[in-house]
Length: 267
Image (cartoon, rainbow, N blue to C red; front, side):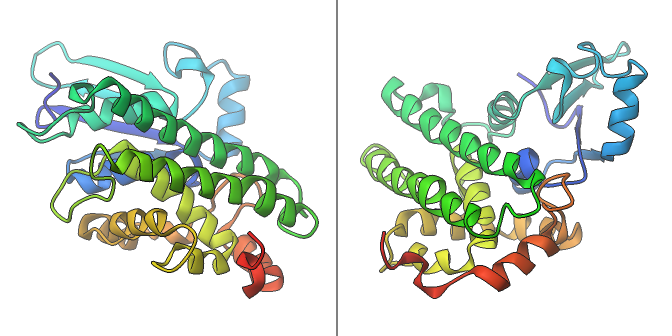
């Protein structure tokens, strides 16, 4: 078992939120010390050209990368892990308080449902972020397609999956309970959705189409440690992707032009 008190936790990613958003949620809420290194895209490209991006340093040749250094012995050992899903699963277990139920201790069907929602949330966000290379990705008709064909489908299925899971466990995190990968991945996805489509927030209210999604999202994003970390590091002002069309300013500007109160009228 990894001890967070004797280990140095280091995350490497781009200066954007994207795939590292749920990772930061888990770490920030845990209260443990960690180092977050941002590598600008220009530097990353140069690192790849000069052969610095190797499997030994960057598993599967990408970021985010988690580095855990054990400082409890004279010969410090380092554990490297790539891929957001794997990093999240690892972090969830090492930050779990002693005596708390681990994901691996849950019934198989419950674990499978949780994994389904986690993977769907990560797939949804990655799918949309890939579109940000195009200048008009948040303008009609692309915007309408993202909403109707991708986002609404994600919200509907996540709401239904959470309702099924709620029959087996509590899906909205308790005020003093642990933040899990399920919570972090869904909350990250919904935060992104509400910034691209501000009117979608109405659907997340108790009388809306996706109230359970809304309860989970609010419970995560109002947790004291998350609020404090987001404020201190100005996370809300950061770009979502490395594209010039994935900045917080660009997304807000496009939302101001195209978001409509009628967004939820014909679901």
